Image 1 (cartoon, helix red, strand yellow):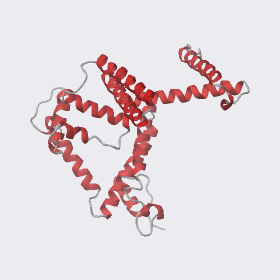
Image 2 (cartoon, rainbow, N blue to C red):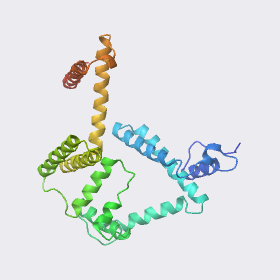
Image 3 (cartoon, rainbow, N blue to C red):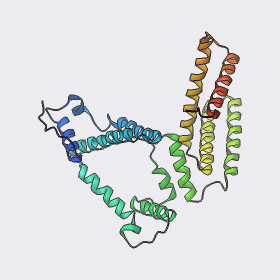
Image 4 (cartoon, rainbow, N blue to C red):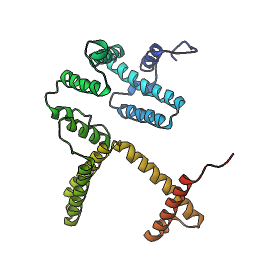
Length: 276
């Protein structure tokens, strides 16, 4: 058992000490076994849970989930310190220096009257400090671990800064139609490899259209998934009410229940609020 003083309130210094104790010889067997690779996905999952708390506008949950992300940061820093690579203070030092360098309009004599100028300066400084010599370098630097839709939108945005973009949303949407036709041709030819390629092109063109519409493609798909789940649940309820099971239904019967569920949801969304 590790002796540790119980406190009414803890600080970042306490968190760092607790993690060090968990990794110590007398600490937790599980924590001592972990590596950067073994807890890699934990950091991603915690970040997504922060995003969900933000979407729910739940400040209590947001506080909790931010704590979980901070724990992951401290955990990785502790392991790095054990490896004599770097420590938490080095991480803080680097990000502080980065913020100062990338905000010359605040910490220097550069003028930036609006957000657009700030972003242009930020991109230029980032490109210089990261040794990115070409626009292609900026595209390659987008993290490959990002969800594909989010990565596609970011790559498209950076390509647009180099002047490679559709002139309008209509042009972007025309590309969706063209890629759809190419996918249909690949399907007709029975070419599996080409189907995959053309489907990828179609998805990428949809993301470009979303970008021109000012819509976040990742968020739009998330909402569509949530809507599908709600409608699926409503259809299942209607089917069960009629004493049937979903796998037993024909495609036509399933379509009828799906249409009923869609109409029920539409009516529910458009119904006036109940009087108190």
